Length: 295
Image 1 (tube, rainbow, N blue to C red):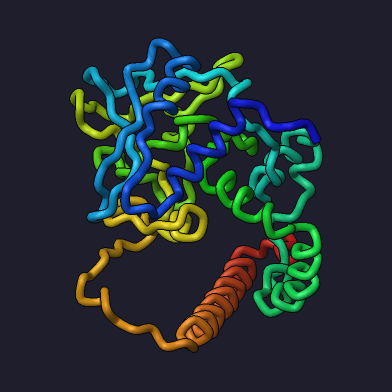
Image 2 (cartoon, helix red, strand yellow; image 1 turned 180 degrees about the vertical axis):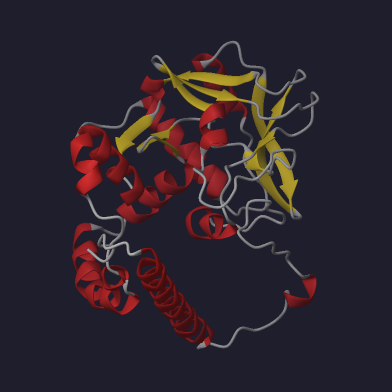
């Protein structure tokens, strides 16, 4: 394995700094000098800020920003890039695109037992054991940093200096997508690969000297909790509206609460699947539709 480059070392150092819970954060002056060497035209920089009474890093700009204006344009050579595992939906769309003649013959849906939670649970021990054999201790925090801080565009991850430094604030002027609509369109519009550069665009007007934030995408809060380690105070993209109630701040959750909630959720999901299957059977009986939907 070749030794890391200066760019890669700076990227790792910034990630550690951004993830550090230290009370007094180091000055980002050296990193800002490095940022200007990558993009001499940017007027933005990293500085300390307060988030929920905790000192963190944030991005500021010495000039006014308007929506759609470039925040930074960095060479791809300064980033880690890697192709991740495509989600099933994207994979299916690629198969349909590569083999369109097969699309009319493929089933409309799969049997629910394929996605049954109990069936999947029986596979977990072997999967977890194989995963532990492949992941070593020192690799885990680095993999977590990449997973939580890299852009993901069309199945490819891009982890670049500065591009992960903006804190989240939802764009409340944007209309949430309807249920079932494709997500990530707005994020992709402001995070682009243009030629051999990564380009970050502002998604809002920001006066000079005010912290520059961005919307991390039209994601429900569980995505932020699972992959980014925080829950936003306000999120217009929830499937159901939720608000953090301060009265719950000091409530102690019993140890078996997770098991109880998981059991309840599985029962509800299984019941919903049975109802959907019964409804489809009734509809097929009424219309005389004999096409198979249980393959």
